[in-house]
Image (cartoon, rainbow, N blue to C red; front, side, top):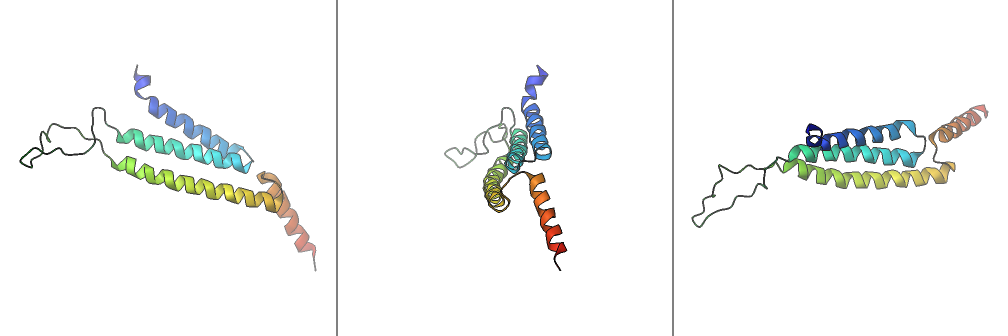
Length: 134
């Protein structure tokens, strides 16, 4: 039963490891971008999971007719800051992924491939060819 209580954290660990594995083990640049996106998604899930309190409510005070907050001492509030920060992280992540994919398209146009080992081989061959010129 404790496993289900920590389910979000197991999902975070799984996504983080899959994203990290895709990032370091694949030579395809698109797969690297997808791995980086998976890694970022796991971090977002982690922060949102830590910001939620069981039984907590949104931090909104309800006032009575006299302007005093009713039962403010008994209410348990969830912290909204992690959720707000993760909304910003999602927007930045989408922009970063779009930029990375645009760079992959430009690399494909320049080198004719999106495999990093083939790109490195072409760059080394170009450097050797330029170094041989008098």
